[in-house]
Image (cartoon, rainbow over all chains, first blue to last red; front, side):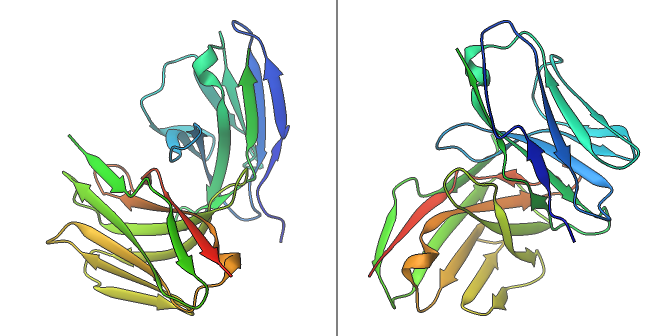
Length: 112
Length: 113
C-alpha cells in the first residue's frame, strides 16, 4: 500500500507568480484535503475534494484553487503569490467513511 | 470566538516519566477529537481519535481523555522515550464543520535521556 506523496518537496517562487502543487492519495482513499501550515502554527484547512468536486473550503481567497482527478490525485494552484503564502503545504487523504486522515510529507513553498 | 489552545511552551521531561499535554477549546461542540504527532518538516501522523461520548481511549503507551464539560482533552505518554520528542497537535471535528479537522498550534515535547 502506497502512502500519500507530494511533489515537489521544496519550491522557491517570487511574488506575483503562480504555483501548482501535486498530491497522490493513498490507495483506496476518495477524499483529499489541502492544508497550509505556517511556521509554529497548526495546519489551516484550505479545501477538500470528494469525487472530483470541492465539498468544503476554509477561509482562503479564490486565488487558491484545486482539482481532483478520477484517480483521486489532486492539485493545489495558487495564483498571484504573496510573501505570506510562504508555508508548508500539506495534502491529506482518507476514506470518506472514516475520520482518520493520512498526511503527505508536504511541499515547502518559499515566496521571495 | 472559537479557540483551540495548546501550550505554546515546550514540555521538557526526563526519559521514563509520563508526559501530559493539554488541549482546551472554547465555543466548539466537537463530535470527535484527534491527536497527531508531527516531526520537523514532516506531515502530521494520526495517533488517536476519541468520540464525544467517550471519556478515555488507550493505545499502547498513549492515553487520551476527553471532558466535554471542562472542554478539555489530556494526552498522556507513559514511560516516555527520547524518540517521543516531537510536536503533538490536537484537532477538533464538528458536524457543523463537515467533520473537517480544525487544528491547534501544537505543543513541542522534548524527552531528555
